[in-house]
Length: 125
Image: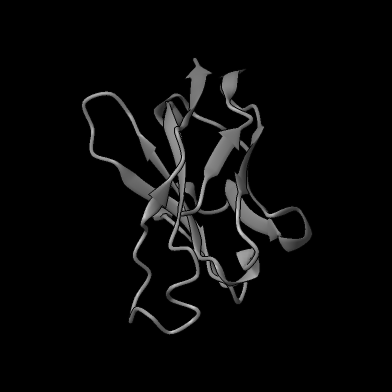
């Protein structure tokens, strides 16, 4: 079982910045793939960015150039640096992990199995 705790959400004006943190339990954190998702009211959950155990990072077109995902394996933490925030970025942000299954060869693709409780990000216009 892997436990995830998000933090760093809050209220910010358009154009502002926030940094979200996702703290994970477990001793093989460096093998974890971690993704940041978001879900706005009435909308489907969407993958915002993800980073593999080999530090390969990808992000959605909607946040390219504004959001950056990174990890600090010494702190068991993945970050989502969000800049130039827009009202449409308002959502609950969740981090998720596969617990290392992809990097360790147990699955052929990343399958997020463990989820945090979410943190609210609100961008005012």
